Length: 307
Picture 1 (cartoon, one colour):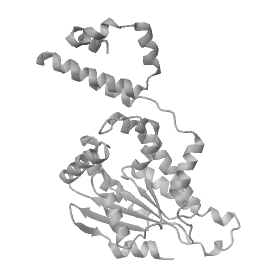
Picture 2: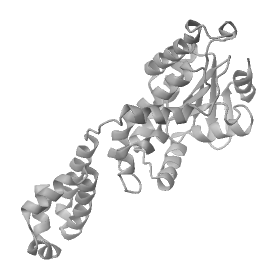
Picture 3: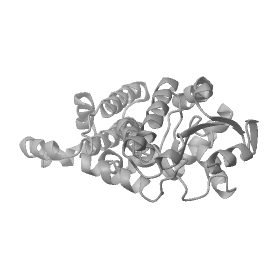
Picture 4: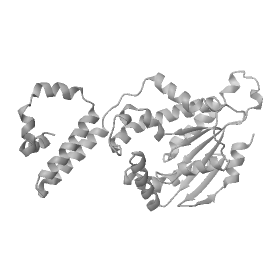
């Protein structure tokens, strides 16, 4: 940052600002500003410096910005208070009633595979009737977090995505636990890139759904165990990269190309690793039109409707 400020003082447009320069006042003001706003200022300053520097020196500005983005991704944000988490979880799950025959579906597939599109198609086709399940979308939970709403960049900074990942996933896990405990059907809309974590989550959900037996609830003898399905949505890397780029332009949510590549190669492997732990496994190839590699619409419909 000192390097950037040194460059800035050499530029013609910086003279006017030096006339009113008050280090003490600026220090107080800066201390109260949000770190994301400061990062945005550094980006703007770097852009101006880059334009004024000889081409041979511009690589130093690039290195400066890489360091600034890294610092942004390392920022430690406090989690929302517990009552806010509770409110979010209740909104996600309270609109769906409980059932004697609950089920949970884990969507699998990397960014750009088209999981949301497939899920919408399953709803329209009547396989998963609208309003019959709690939709637990990890990415959607970012909108509740101050770091996300405070980033006014379009698209959002990669560092903002990284900073909100942990808490967004935590909120989704809380909602999954509540849905399982209340025997509410749910869909976990994520990548399923961590097979071991998914196996643990499935085991926890099944355990929680059985807790009604210990409450003396009327009719508990008729309650069926939680059934679990994995729906893997797959697409070629080229298709995924193109979809991710279009989505970032529309939603402002960026995804690094390297992450898309890793998920494209690893999510299918992780999904197949948990295949023996679930009641239904469906594999869909989605490069434009749906192709069922394993399972089919009828299997999904029977899974969700069976009592």
